[in-house]
Amino acid sequence: MTHTPTPFPEGFLWGASTAAHQIEGNNTNSDWWAKEHSATEHVEQPSLDACDSYHRWSDDMDLLAGLGFTDYRFSIEWARIEPAEGHFSRAEIAHYRRMVEGAIARGLRPMVTLHHFTVPRWFEERGGWTADGAVALFARYVAATAPVIGTGVRHVCTINEPNMIAVMAGLAKSGNDGFPPAGLPTPDADTTDAVIAAHHAAVREVKAINPEIQAGWTVANQVYQALPGAEDVTAAYRHPREDVFIEAARGDDWIGVQSYTRTMIGQDGPVPAPDDAERTLTQWEYYPAAVGHALRHTAEIAGDIPLVVTENGIATADDTRRIDYYTGALSAVGAAIEDGVNVAGYLAWSALDNYEWGSYRPTFGLISVDPETFARTAKPSAVWLGGLAAGRELPRVAA
Ligand code: BGC
Image 1: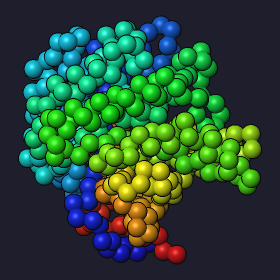
Image 2: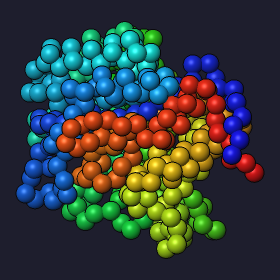
Image 3: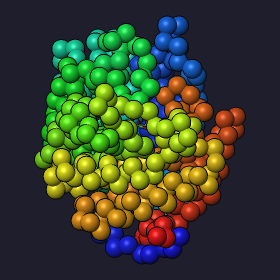
């Protein structure tokens, strides 16, 4: 492997991402906490203390800044900010403002996600996204975050992976049979419409708070690849699961691209990866080139708005595979930039080994966290990736 400096656009974002529920711990007022402790949901492990980042966010930021990163994406938790309908917590708003200021003080530009999968328990109990008034309630919450994001925050993500929200709603409606062996369940169309409306309302609220804020959302890209003759089947399969959410971002300031692996589609739909394919701890096919395809596809659909890789990474216990994965991924990002794709940043998933929605087993982190002491240890991949960030280079895989 050789290292060739790559001309990044001015202000390129180099960072790592997290989400509140996955790292904070004791997010007791959220729908996910309720689900984790329900007798009927069968969640493998509850999140409990997670990484205790609610108290230790400054340790996380110290490490990321010290490693060389310039950007940190984290989410703020609606369930804490509005613990009961219409009641906003000044203390929690002040907590998240301290995080924004803490990031800036360390030289990390904060990217703030307003919603990352969890909602307040009361919101879920009144019917979630498709209940009457849901969009207005989300918009009111967004308006209430003004003291957090009003100054010093350039990028705001309204809703993380709206397509996965619609997919999970579809799965629940169909009786919760679990994921198919390949591909994704059918998204719920009403949820799709609701989250798109919520996004557009949220963008208006964010702009009302400060028109300088760059507002967007982040879409999960599955990198659907057509087997010979299955191009039309692939396009039809992909549209409700992905493209409709990218189309909804036309006119935004930027769009987030999140990619981990690929999905192959044959005449009869998704086809599992071959038995001998390398798989990660999430059982996804090891496919570092995914992010390059995801960027190119998003650019085709979204038009010329800046793309930010807001999540990309691998669940593995073998950190050398993580470095290998990021090497391949960054090489694909570099090639896309050279081909004229407007890529404004790259944020790895994830800063920390964290709560992977039901289990702590899949470790995506650049930094490990001791479950008893919460001590953080940067892995070799963190040192390596932070070094690239500090040097503003992309690794190249020798031909
Ligand atoms: C989500 C993260 C998640 C990651 C790995 C994305 O779907 O935004 O919350 O941990 O992928 O599964």
